Image (cartoon, rainbow, N blue to C red; front, side, top):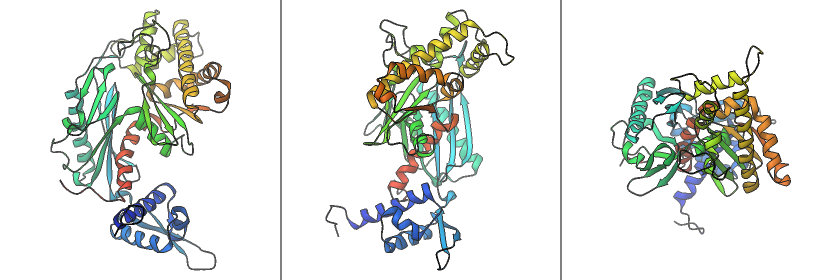
Length: 417
């Protein structure tokens, strides 16, 4: 029987289940009594939905609390082991695969470093190498946790570049700076035999998965409009606004900050990434006379640069490293000012391994430059801070993608194909 809005009874039941699961996930443990006003559902609907979820073991009892003059009220929470997700961060220095339970507690992890050359300059890698690392990582975390692959709700993957979702090929990645042109990554991963065919893949830009994590669990909670910046080997951003629930990845790193400037790895001249990405930052240090440690990855080389500019023993700083970092802070501030003027966010959050490493040293300087370059009205209403979830935020955000889809289905698994 169809409802007047065009939704049928099955749709309404799915929406009711989704509402209860989301509230328990974000605000639980909760009693049936408190779930009703929190979801807007009637007490009868709450009783029916909770009974179903308890029977399916998606929800479990978690103690009780006293009520005003009545019987104690039983608390309910999501059952952590009732489902698992895999999050993957395809970075530019390594591929990280993590297995999470339904509470997003990490159960297992696998890291696959990528080859480097010189002071952290990465060798261009092919898509088969990355797909192989993802497949091997999935097999490793499943084995480490002793988990039946059928328990996996989905695999979320954060990648550098633009993601296009097509019919037969699924997600296709356009990552010009890393040498990827229309790579059918989803098709390459399916059919490997490690996961049942019905397990879905969710492939998105890494900045978007970072933004998803910070908005759900990190420094973005409670903000209606925010920009989450991913600062690693390259530079990207995710814009979250009222009308875009899960955020929109933008190629912020390829905004032009200097006409006829340095050649970016994307091929254009004067991109922000050509000045502020970790790879370009280390190149600029070397070009200016700095001496990055040979044959190390970018994270180690950046640590050495910071140590040279800010000696722990209180000695004289390396003027070359200090100058290049000061210039980088201004470029980043100018880039953030464009985000402020364009989107007028409540918050800008800086994440990514390089952003977190550098932010503790010169975030105040970046803030000053951003405010000086931006229009006064939006600049006076934005907070600029570091992300709260650390270097694993991309994998957490990637795992949230199948989790959000699972909740949207009302906690129903996809049927076998």
